[in-house]
Length: 338
Length: 135
Image (cartoon, rainbow over the protein chains, first blue to last red):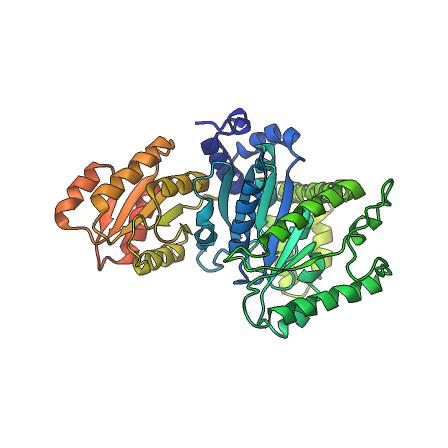
């Protein structure tokens, strides 16, 4: 049975689920589905949630989604993409993020989809961006993307999401130092989860100190007192400044009990408003589409090249490289000089 | 070039609180190269059918130790059909008396597994159900 983009637009959940499968598997019909939905995209607020394994990402997403749904008269339609790792040995995956999201069952305004990383690096799966396109086109207002439990360099989410939440937990000790250079840099909101545990305040303090250092380094020394809120200066805002003028909040949360969650909900909303006002929203969209386009060109060129050259010359050249008769770069150049 | 993976929802309907069996089978199927969505304890038939829909799974595996299988399993199957998931295959594992098995199969269950089942066997049955030529 063909999947109807019209049905997806009208909110048919089965069609949506089937479309996501088609996109994930790269089925032939995924192309026409994405094409039909693409004109309707660009409206959803994409919120990435990342952090080390076991810091409570799923529990936080569960609470955030619940709070957003209860917070207003016209609650946003929410989709959640939860990515977990695929085994490099068997290709199988155990996707367990739904366990923490039991509160959301029964709410037809929420759609949760688990996704295996299928060998992709960077904390997301290859098709995660396309999932976001489908869900955006399907009319979801807010899309949470929970990454694989991430270490230092899994920062792909920063290229996809408008707002990135990095979740930390106390007790990771010196690792706080270690991750300074990687994942913390992409945070728009920092959450110290499990705030009821000893050491949470130390973790929060260390994170704040780190943020203050980077503020000074960028020449953006806060002038409005200790608690710099984003400056609400009206009028034109220079484009380059759009990211730097946001001060990353550090929020203590106990997601299992829901404390601190309201504050994070407000921060997500303020960050969206900030991006819209500063031009950062458009900037991020442009960046993302540019990266998408480049990646697609790479894929297409590679595919065409493979079809054109066939297997023979490649194996031949590879053999020469293995025998040290040709450098890899020379081989690549001769193979691509068609 | 489609890269199709068998997706399996493992769920525990009802009130019994022992999910070791469910975890063992989830792990075994993962090792057999499938993508397993594990939903945890105390799921209602509604929750299971909704998760199966959102996740677009091929198989729903129900683990039941409470003795309530004759009530819960048909309820899950009914809800799956209500959601339009007519092709989803339902497997049941747990403490199921011999005498109840024909009745469950009659209601549309694909297979029933008792204690001591070799997990390999379950994985092979699932592969068989989807790729008969590879089985």
